[in-house]
Image 1 (cartoon, rainbow, N blue to C red):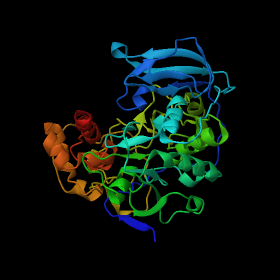
Image 2 (cartoon, rainbow, N blue to C red):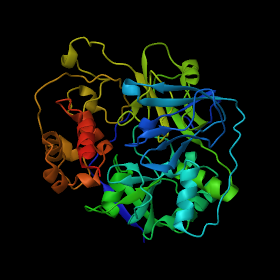
Image 3 (cartoon, rainbow, N blue to C red):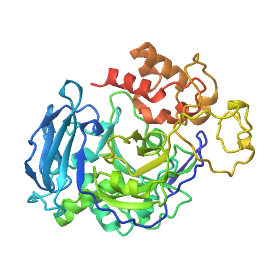
Image 4 (cartoon, rainbow, N blue to C red):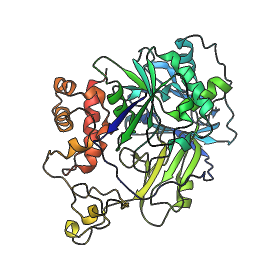
Length: 443
């Protein structure tokens, strides 16, 4: 019988703005590839402004591994290369011709891991495989002890994974058959016990593991911690199901297709659903046509770990949802003294806790300012790892490498501390501090 893990420590935040299970009409004319989406790579440009490109044309590579290519998701012209401070490349923008003409696909015989690795790097799909520790693009010269796939998502307003992969099970199987060659270890697929997993259960060549419980049960790092914990010196790889579809299409149909479904959610939109887009599509026109009146924040990803893209609304490379919520900053009458029947609070500051079924409409306000650091037991209640979160945070602040290692930093990513950040009475930037600690340790 497959193993079942119950995540007891966590928190489900009920908010309004779910996506309807329907495909909304969408057509983008601009696309962007952002080096910041790929952790700790140093980009080397391979194109110039005004140059014609096809789907699969390399735009930049990693200076440390020039075989690792980052390619255009659309055909058209390089409209601009946007730079920031110290000429840092912010993104490469493509103006699409709407033909999506691909480069010539040449797949070598699938006889060994090296052929597969070089092919995935050549056509820009190696970066869909990521590595823990450090949550970065997998290093092809390392061998993982296992590969993990998460088949569900428990984040607020998360997309329905079964809807994202609808009618694609054969292509997913082809993708699994390909990545099987990349590791001598097992491939694990995590499923939510109470979900409809009928299609995914037909997959072969993998080991099924089931989860129940609260968010962050759907986070792959939590699943790895429960299934096969990482020790110092070990690495594991992970990949999502839609990326497996892209790999399956490349090797099965010799087709380069970067399109995927993403959920459009949040209370800032009149109409919510799913759109099918190539990675890095520009969303401002679509969102403005569906936006409500007022000032709203556009988040690529979920409200806990996503990135604010209001000023540059290109979808994040690894994200599967776009969330639009009201901007904060408005003062409330009587402040925390108000009864707060419509306001969410983990510490029961407001009376809304009396209605556990109620859904809320959050905004981007911190609901507090700079204050003394107060560590309490709240964090342990929402952090499902066998790790002391507050002590690890202190070690990162103190830059104590030995203590960080002893407290288990190799098992976590900064996103695992999102719930600690949300409930923190001191408004500490947990994710930012943990990321700085990981950056110190990366080799």
